[in-house]
Image 1 (cartoon, rainbow, N blue to C red):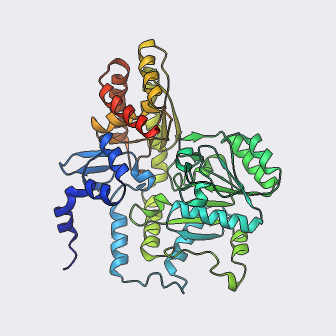
Image 2: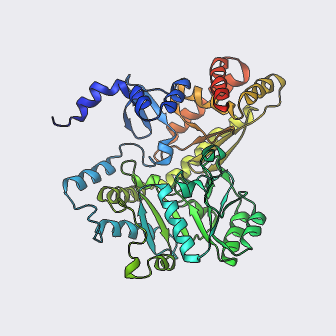
Image 3: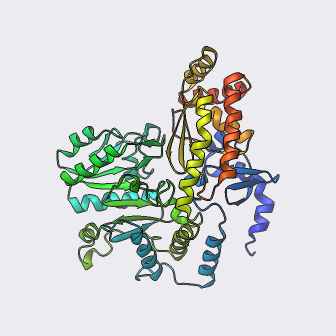
Length: 460
């Protein structure tokens, strides 16, 4: 029997949740059904998803930042069709593939002058793992520092750098010498670095969990301290990189010059997993120091043809469509549109982030009636109010967002970089409606009750 994708989708499309629950992850299916996110998506384009009833959904998760170019971008589709039709030899392994060299060349052209080598991977976490190995080998030191609230992936080395207890619970003990410092606290960082045994300080330029942003003064200190104590500065740009924040690399906002940069997500164009670790020639040459060590660190799928083509086409499209500047301008439009809502609603405290990495921060209101409802939710499960924003945005307005982290009242927006004023206006209008309801009525009580029950069951 020949494979027929369309027939498979037509005959089994309605079985998605039962199949996933039975064969992959039943708890995720329970979560999606509890919060009403159990839709059957059948098509995607640009900033939008479409379900089997033809309804459109504004996707402000963008695959956690993967779909920076939007979904089904024609330039990416064309490039990948060309690659498949060319029948190019992929993963020969004992080879030095042209496309990998070309993509590395393009990434280095877009990096600061101190960078000289690229190692390709299949994910952000794998890029972080490579950075850990290279930094420890190049410095011959064992310790690695990370920040509270940090997220660098869920493989074992990356998990050892994870500041989220919800991800670490039950998986310890973790790698020895992997220690935490507060994000934004230069004095705490210096106390650890002063021992001169730290190989790397691994840090996100903007933290994905909570969308935390540190001031320029902190970054000035970080760079100087790492240089002074011989510690490599590893900047994790897996989510922030390639235009997300209104600069090609988020670390450029503060003039940071890292020793190693990790990237992934947007580099894929949304089609083929690809990541990269970018480092100096000096670091790379210490690891690959002889012909005997030419393969001392490797990865089976690192140079595959489709991934390299996806990366090359993505970088070209970012340039052709001036998406970095577009992200900056659309981010400014979000800030302008959301500012009146911060003034209007006492539950809405702050908008933070850069470009199209946006955190909406909610907190306890002043008025007694609204404050009592808020505290009731917080007693059920800390951070539950943010789900009362995410849920109605999806249910009533068909806008897909996420809570920025466990036990925090921050809603995170990661729109595709192709989003524009129409998407900004639709979101601001929807958020206005949701917050008005949250302030003046108990219309969300049923949704809140179901979430609270689910949270209590999970906590026990």
